[in-house]
Amino acid sequence: MRKRFGLTLKIKIIFLLILLLGSSLAFFTSFSVNLFKKDKAAYIYETSLSTTETIQGRLDQYLAKTARDFQLIDNILSTSLSKDKKPIAHQVLLSNQESIIYSRDNVFLKNKKNIDSQRLTEEQLNDFRSLLKNDDLKAISKSSNGIEIKVLTSNNQTYFLLTNKRNRSALLINSSQILIPIEESKIYDSKLVSVKGNFSFPKSATNYDMGTISDILSTSSITKTVKESIFNGEKYLLSYSKLRSFDFYIISLIKHNKAFKAATFLSRKSLYFGIIVLASGIILGVFFSRSLTKPLESLYHQTLKVAAGDFEGKVVISSRDEIGSLSHSFNFMTSEILRYMTEMKEKVRLENEVAVAQLVQKSFFPPLTYDSKRIELSAFYTPASECGGDWFHVTNLTKKTIIIMADATGHGVPAALLTAAIYTAFNSLAELHKESLTSSRELLENINNIICTMETNLYLTSFVAIIDEETGEMVYSNASHMEPFLIHRSESKYTKADLIPIIDAKGPRLGHKRNSKFPENKIQLLSGDTMVILTDGVFESTNNEGQQYGQRSFIKSLCNHLEKPTIELQNSLISDLKDFCKDHPYDDDVTLMVVRDKS
Image (cartoon, rainbow, N blue to C red):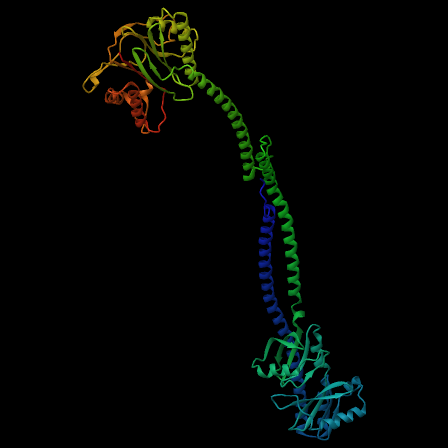
């Protein structure tokens, strides 16, 4: 069943790219903008203070010069009030660009050039003259040498009045020279402010809270600095610098957002740049994830086909990276599965054929027990694989019991086919020579010639015994087979010495050479005699430690159980063998036959 997915790999990759790019850009933008703001803030603060100091320096220079001219005129006129001093004092007055009139006692000097340029009427001059002697005007500033500055207003024009109480003198000047440096800066709103904050010049469109400015100036012990202040609910950058000549401050104000306009602009541009980079990263991420996930999607769809049983499809390998290697491995896996399935089909076919062969081979064997007038027999047979190379047969022909034990080279299907050949050969001979089949030698020679005609290069060992049911005489021949054991009945405990191996009448293996000759021998069986015929698979059986059962263990087991009846003896011998091997499979076919004379 197809499993439902949550987020696809492509979405996860794009999300990861967005997260990484977004966080990186956010950090970079925040860091760079903050760094720029700090640097820009320092520059803005420095520029603001520098502008204020420049205005303060120029006004200091002008006001100091004007105060010196005022003092010089006072000094000139103080020495003598004679007429010859007035022209000199008048020349000093004329040298000051902003001076209008000077008054002291009964002396009244005019700067006609400035009066004309200001278009002052005689009536205004008389008003000024009367105001010059008015002590009710409050001073807004004072110099260290006692000169005070007062403010006069006429026809919306501001004039500054310098007074010296000690000399009862006064000098009226125009404000244009003061206004020039203040108004030169188009960015800052600069003003000349008294120390107590009760006066500011010039007036501006913005109505600043002079109380706040007064608090800042009166509470600060620093003569020049830059501060951030709030006016009318808006944040301003305020810089101020104190004049040296008079108790004035030059203040310069600019809106905070205007001062930091460049930083704000950079922040926005950085944000736009970040968005562009992020969008570019997303686009690149989509293309990159597509190139990464497309082979995986192809691989996924191919796995669905494999799950449905289609192993023919192949994944197109478009890269040489890990995904390409994975695709190659997948293609190799499907090819191997196809090959394995083909082999499995062939294996199943062979197994079916082997099962049929096994079923057929079982039909070659007689019952595991045999009981005649004289002979009692019990046999055990188990192949090492599906089909075995061991074969035994027992039958009764014309009052004779014929016993055959054969062991083909190896085991499996080829050996089983050879046992089929000897089975067929024996049955043919038994059918053709039923009455005359009394010689073990002739029986082996005929079987050998039949096997040699097959030209299989496979051989058999065999032991043949023909027992006369009346006399107990046993005629036997051995075609290189393992020697059987003959044990006469004994009333005492059986020992190894009681076991007589039948070692004579040995000839070549069956199928080795056509027309081979096999010797024959006779032996008389006595009542109670036991003969044990077996194949080499009994001795060669091993346990989990790789130890062989061997002849010694078998002889010991045989001696321990010889007094038992035939079937029990055979069962006991096989039981001891199984106890030794435990769960270890047999390395070769195991066949054992117990023959006993019960006469």
